[in-house]
Image 1 (cartoon, rainbow, N blue to C red):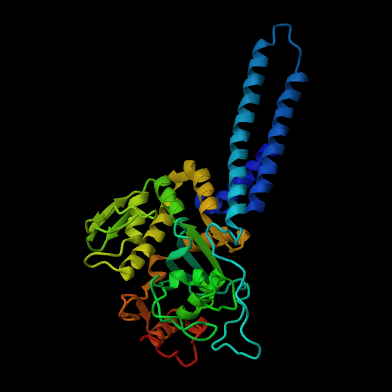
Image 2: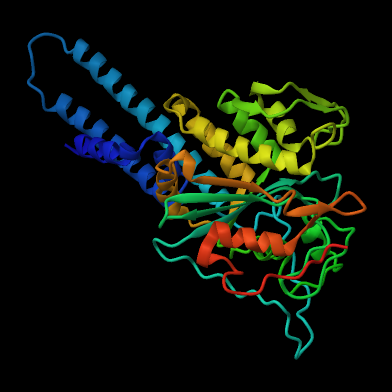
Amino acid sequence: MPAVLVLLVLIYQLRQGLFVFGARLINPSFSMGALLVVILLGLWRVAAVGHAFLTGESLQTSRILDRVVVGALVATILISHSAAGYMLWVSHEAGSRAFTPENPNLIDQATPAPSLAPGTTPEPTVTHVPTPAIGSRVTILFTGVDADPTRGEHLYDSIMVVSYDPSTNSVQMVSVPRDSSSYPLYFGGQDSPVRRINALPGAVRNGWVKSPDAPYTTLVKEIGYLVGIPIDYYAVMDLGGFVKMVDMVGGIDVNNPSAIDDPVYATPVGTIIGFHLAAGPQHLDGNQALAYVRSRHGADNSDWARSSRQQEVLVDLLHKMAQPSEILQLPNLISTLGSSVSTNFPADQVADYVAAGQSIPGQNFRQVVLGPPYSILNSNGSSCLLNYKVAELSIQLFGKDSTWYGKPTPANTCP
């Protein structure tokens, strides 16, 4: 009966599919509870087999066959429960690492810079974003970090805002060019035309930008201010983990909009290898997928173009991970997530949002890259956001949830 009850519970947990079940496993509390159940059930089953053998009728013939069967049953129980226990332990450890928001390997979160001078009122101001209520919009900042230790700083080369509105069952994805500069700061003033936004946390850590917040928190709030939507949570992933995940699922299929011929594309460690990809449908392994989302040189290629490709790859990777055929890769995928991702998203809500995301029809995804007409090129080749145009877009995408809804649009800060 205990085994039957646990089986019924497992069937219930799998009701929304394997991918949602996997999302539940990365919740450390869920995986630890499941691990204890597996251990206790295994002990119960071993005891039940032993009890049945010891209290069975004594036959005149030899019980050698009985002993062989008992040994096989016990071995089967131990092996199966050990395998399940191992997967749950891996999931628990991965979740414990991933849901540690201050991972120093991925997040530049040093001691905050000194506060503004007494009596100074930063303009505009951004208040603390409270935890969203059930049924309300949830917005997450996804960043891909190049944490090459030889560089001495973290560069957030992929910056994407993903917002889910349950009232309309829709998702809005907005990519911010990582080389954006000359942007207004949410705590007042304006950053220089030289510094790119992907290096903003490092500038805060080094004291070049006097932010009232810690380095990565400054980036989160700044992106929320520029896009015009308060950001509730963030998730950071390193480039090496991205390559591993793509390879684990057997690669991804993309539809390259135009041929890429980038002779100076460099790997994260700086070795120039070049990247060339024909237009049309393509199957990419991990390293090719990384080049696809990082390459920005050559004809018809730019930071804006690769931002669009990053959105495509993110959606394709999630779809591939959700396939039932990936069940054997589930422990490795979860382990890679744990070592490559850091997030402050509530662990106990991940599965619910994954389930909700699978029910969103394709036409309810709106994907935007803040290239032209929402930005222009500075004289140094960096992007400069046209704040008033981005504010108008923000109202179109987020409605009353937009920071700029019912307010005057911000002034232009481009040189």
